[in-house]
Figure 1 (cartoon, helix red, strand yellow):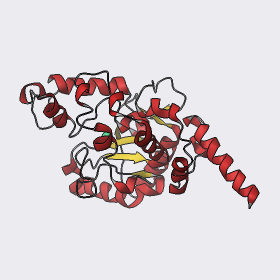
Figure 2 (figure 1 turned 60 degrees about the vertical axis):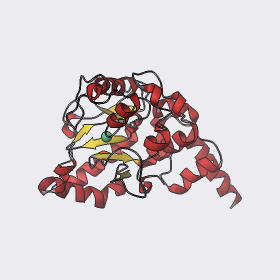
Figure 3 (figure 1 turned 90 degrees about the vertical axis):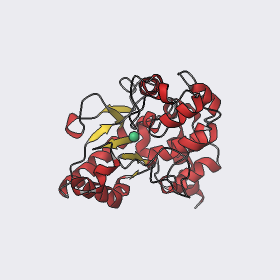
Length: 266
Ligand SMILES: [Zn+2]
């Protein structure tokens, strides 16, 4: 028993210290995640992934997504998340479901582009409004952008573990082909480590982004990043873009980064 215990501890330390490219060694179990917290050995060097401060094109933890599985070339995922996605894709195909990745890893600079185009009104909000004209107050403007878009430094799309599938309208998933696809994912995605962080807001998920039926997360890695964010990501670290000054007032880490479906956490 003693030797077994030492082996288990060694494996945990190994998984924690390893770069994401060796995440295949990491246990996906909630027990492992809890142990990481209990023993305070969370790898803070991975905060650069949590905050999107890397380039997936050159980072060896990341792999390009084949155009066969996406709507365009040039998207990336962490290798372990991609391997599991391919298995999920094949199983869905067998069931007559055609999954397609519409968005995957977006680093800080990419997210900054999305955010600032909405902030300045260059891109309209999904409501059709020009945020720069409709919302003069910075807090109100940020809140409206935050219905569907993250502040740079706080997006799960930084992590290389999260994907948007097939369609960016919730309604598409409520009838016909979209409903069939959604029901299949709800029933089977967990078998491949994927879960849906942005479920409908309710008493269990009162804060955060609006519901996104297209957004799925690879929890064997993203759970660790959620724990990292919970422990080490602070609102005053969210800087470097237009409107970042209201991150503290809006408590973006607590309300948005951690404002996810509890079933997705551990
Ligand atoms: Zn998304």
